[in-house]
Amino acid sequence: MDLVTVLLSIVVILFLANVFRNQKQGKYKNFPPGPKPLPILGNILMLDMSKPHNTFYQLSKEYGSIFSIHIGMTKMVILCGYDTIKDALINNAEVFSERPHSPLFAKTSKGHGIVFANGENWKVMRRFTLSTLRDYGMGKKSIENKITEEAECLVQKLRSYEGKPFGDFTSIIGAVTNIIVAILLSKRYDYEDPTILRLMHLVNENVKLLGSPWVRLYNSFPGLMDRLPGPHKTIFKNTEEYQGFIRRTFTKYKTELDVNDQRNLIDTFLFKQQEGKQESTLYYHNDNLTVLVGDLFGAGMETTSTTLRWSILLMMKYPKIQTKVQNEIDKVIGSAQVQMEHRKQLPYTDAVVHEIQRFGDIAPNTVPHVASQDVTFKGYFIPKGTTILPVLHSIHMDEEYFEKPKEFYPEHFLDSEGKFKKNEAFIPFSIGKRSCAGETLAKMEMFLFFTTLVQHFTFKAPPGAILDLTPAFGSTNSPKPYEVCAVPRS
Image 1 (cartoon, rainbow, N blue to C red):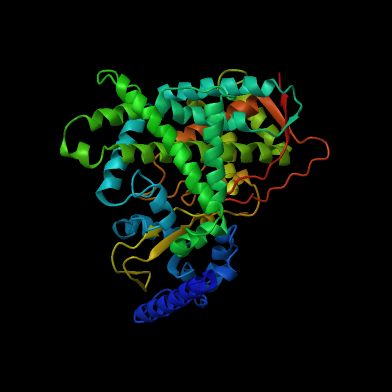
Image 2: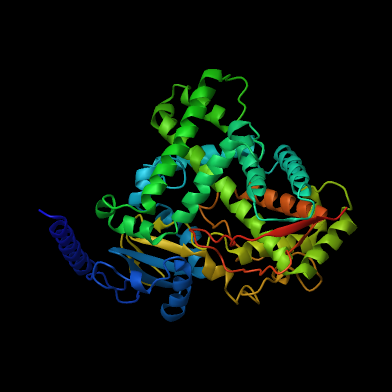
């Protein structure tokens, strides 16, 4: 049987499967409406495959805050708007807190770790993660001191450029990475260390490739895509190398483990592993440790470093806002070291930090959820097993909560007297049981790194540079490559 015959057979089988599935799902009344799908392809051709959240946001204007869409033969329910997403993830958390089966992530994580795990395994790993992050300083003075020390190292690195243009941001990514590395491994890497540079490359490349249409095709047709070359193969290769480093690291740590002197998250996990309880065997095994450390390393590195790159670009783009931040810092802190206790005294700076996160829109979609049981939600019937995708982009662009959503406008977080005001629709870390476990750490890092950098430097665009605020291609919204002059203020 030649290749053409095989491919034709696969297409016919997929077509028949799609017809059968649509007939089966057709019996459900009040399923959320949506655009009519094509056989096999679904609605793929109408999507902005590089930034699908843009298409979802536009479709919400036609179909409302809850609608359906087909990605290949996978039928999904899209949730838009703060009220609808909050209702799903908070008020109906028991129904919408599981993860759907994803062929790509099933291959890379196999249901282990925290991000793509389900059931009791996820509950145990999340409890362990939250308690251990708190034990090793999340939200406390000890981790604040580590961040301020790292921020000073970053300041010295940027000073070495002497105000000349540079476009290599590995030092900024490395500074953020060192914070999560301290918690996971009790280490600090120099910014030029080949080990940390390689790990950062693997994570950054995978984050970009996860936004590729090839990944969506893989999740729709894994059997076929396993036989074809493409970016999905690079993701698997990078993940294997990344996880190999983690396994080698904790294998070494196991030989050095002192149960009376647990130094980091890996030590604590290994101690749990040796407790001899039933839970130790069921959940505290090497596969869970490998994927958990990978999840935390990637999340701890990517979002905060990307937000910092947005912050520098936005300060260049809006120099008057940068000056206003610097004036407030000079008045309140002067040349003293920035501390978290200063945040309440720096309302404008705090507002700018929040607006950077809203405008940057780093994670426009949450990681998909799934309906764990049949449910009627907002008047629509959603059957068990349906993939649910909350679109955070739709919230951060909502004029009901943000007066000028398409603009960079710090006043979104200031009242009429210039005092900082919270906005309930500001949820860059998502909400509910699946919200980011490291949210408290990320907020502390963002405030301390940003305020320290703007205290010491004025960020200016090189002569003739065009400052493009359009996000780069990738699964997250990161700024396109740019150059900057970090001009020392003293």
